[in-house]
Length: 82
Image (cartoon, rainbow, N blue to C red; front, side, top):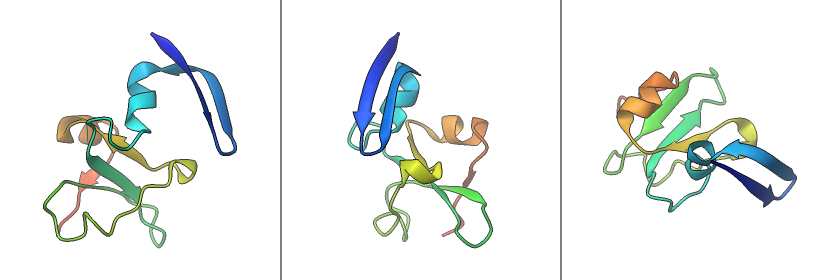
């Protein structure tokens, strides 16, 4: 299923539903996939980790939300060490 999306500086009418849901906070996908500004490394944070609440997701920078740790790993992210 494809859905349309409109956001600040972003328009798409051909994103798969799963990809759209991974971009929307509060969609049930609560694992944060961030990209380090220093190294470019892709790291995901799960609820309860010390930096989880401080981690902000910027979809425009390629960051995203994941619905499972397995999904995050398959997408190339590694779990945060903290």
